[in-house]
Length: 107
Length: 124
Image 1 (cartoon, rainbow over the protein chains, first blue to last red):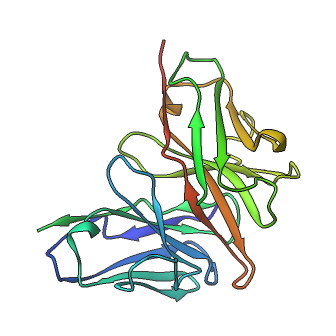
Image 2 (cartoon, rainbow over the protein chains, first blue to last red):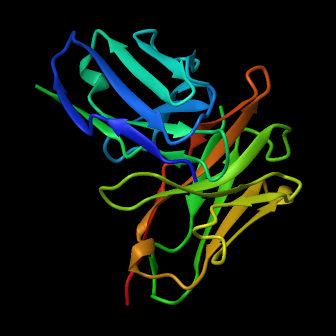
């Protein structure tokens, strides 16, 4: 199985900040990497597919980049509704696996 | 807009079988390029993909659970189901049913839709 490692596990930030979350795969997954946002008590929500594709309805302050083994999710101009946990997920081969999550908290 | 709704018992005894059904509203389960799956999340922890099924009945399972898991589909009812047998306390989790989409333009899969989740506790 492919192992996905996110960093940091948590971060504190302020409204308006630009933040970056990284995700590393244990092997080359090309661009088969998705990002999700999860708020407490809710199901995750797709933000980015295929490493850099912005899901319909997701604000453009969210962006993704990377290929191979190293990927990033960037939020440019953090808004109050962005405080949540973020997960990466590989879709290169089953079983699909997720990173352990990055919790973005208010400073 | 597509909606997914999980249903089933919220409490299962150890060694028994966990059974959940997901009903699909607002779309056909028989659509091409859609796979129907289950993902679980233990309280306070991360996400684990259990498996998925195509409307033809082709299944894909997480090998860590494969010996205990069965996913089936009922096209006439627009539903798919999860059975997990011989459960233990480690199977206590929120269980989400999901729609996985194969986006052929980028040759990529992603999980586009999620149910609200069903909390299943394993306890005697």
